[in-house]
Image 1 (cartoon, rainbow, N blue to C red):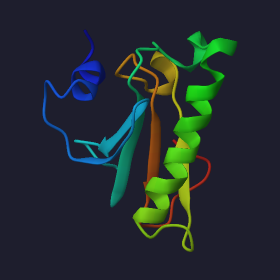
Image 2 (image 1 turned 180 degrees about the horizontal axis):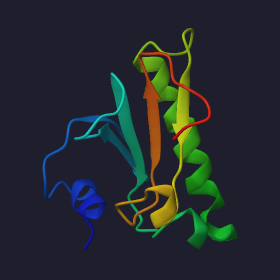
Image 3 (image 1 turned 90 degrees about the vertical axis):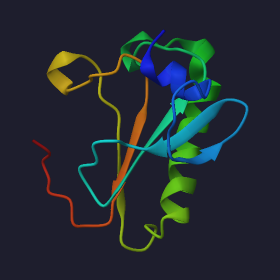
Image 4 (image 1 turned 180 degrees about the vertical axis):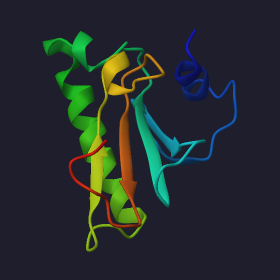
Length: 112
């Protein structure tokens, strides 16, 4: 079982900021910005490259939750970034689809 599945099942601790029946959002343990929250589905999906039409609802919920996380963190006015990585070259280190919500400082473009 992957580490994010364990977070979703509360088998390992996390600083949870949002949760419902389908997803959980929690602070990243290695933040790259003052606000760095991960939003994950409770259902294990390996990566964004592995999704199908059946995942459309939960993926939509991830983005709505990302917006709520940003709002709760006070980022709507200053701005925030939502990032989804897939595969080794993109920097995906946990193979469970997840959305990064980043903010709290100016973010450069293009990303590294």
